[in-house]
Image 1 (cartoon, rainbow, N blue to C red):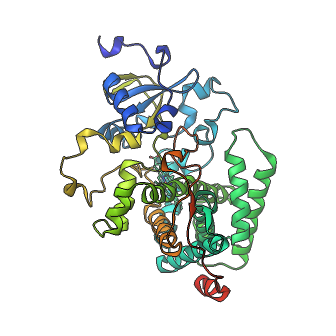
Image 2: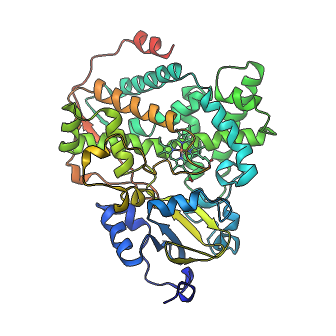
Image 3: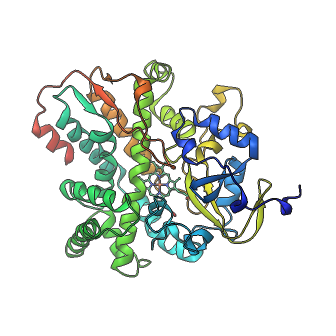
Length: 421
Ligand code: HEM
């Protein structure tokens, strides 16, 4: 059949649900079956009746994300959204409905809103940041360290990213904790939710007012000073974007690394045996189980063919980052050649590629390192097969990681206070 004669996305039936890839014990088997059936671009169902293309190939993803003229980041170009086919309270909303920020913008507007993010991150004092992250991790461990048990997701991996990124904006831990609750409530439903929205707005307005009165060495001050951000609304949207974009991704990276180290004897043995450094271990997670398994989305601006599939104007394309990292065309049989190779797509590529790769790595590296050093004799409290994942079409984050360890004695408060300086 000629490509042009093939049925369009909406005419296809019996499609695999995208959640089948993230929920599977072996997601690569599901991606492999899709590749076998369709090639490197496969139709999938996001929700009943809502179809999209899942791009499974490394080179096909690069082709999509590096071509802004053909593939937009703005969901207003998504036909099913524009025509009101996607329900306003759809679970897809938090990741796929438009918001006024760099993430959902194209071209000049994207470059204008992205510059303050890139420049403020480049200006961070990384030594100070590393001390702050370590102190935050140490303080969290102190809260459960004398109990001998913990859930390393809810007590740790899900808390470290929000507190540390909020800290970069000069927002203290209590406010950071409230912000975390507010943003979770805000993003857990697409429907407008008044109370959390007001709480988030109040915390950010206060942070901005206090930095206006007394500028500091933080990202809020950098955003207030940046000429590209035209008003308070744009500054607020940029802060919310940074904090929310850094949350689920970093939580998932920390949790996946800890899970592998606690559950996979081969992985833990290689790390402890010194044959694999912590950075190599982190890279291995980025390759094998990247924090965003499937990343929404790009929207075709013209009819075109990609991976041999007839993509129509207005179709959504999901970036299958995990599938692309395991694309057989980008691997060799020699595992030694793979060490140090960072050509994975965990950060995506092109103009929207994650701007916080150094910051994200630093947070994750320090969080994993601190947990492993401070929790003595730590081990999983349940069999590894019983670890369940949070349901999501996008990520494969463990819902919890119950562990036991030798309880620490009471931690000297002064040590924690000194660490925060
Ligand atoms: C540590 C694990 C992280 C991973 C794996 C990750 C991954 C990604 C990916 C895949 C994208 C989307 C790129 C695209 O659509 O093509 C992205 C975008 C973004 N990330 Fe990250 N991220 C991480 C941490 C962070 C952190 C800590 C921050 C903030 C401090 C952050 C801020 C952002 C922002 C602002 C964007 C939007 C950029 C744009 O649209 O121009 N990320 N990230």
